Image (cartoon, one colour):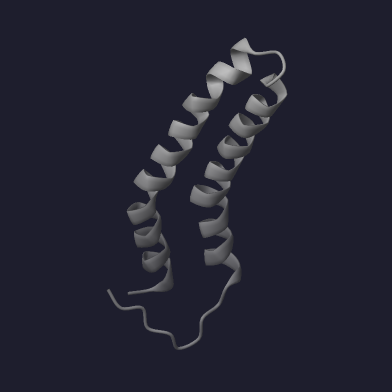
Length: 78
């Protein structure tokens, strides 16, 4: 298995747990972000933070790893 295939396989196996956890936290933060003036800033910070970290984890990090890390002679097994 090549490094590119290993990165793609890792992304496919982790997309559902990462996405579901992020969506659950975002939906759970919506009531405080929309209803309570005192907690509104915290709620929006959590929502935007989880949105950004989800995109970073599922798209940016695998692409950067595949582009910049060169593994010489490594064999990835399944």
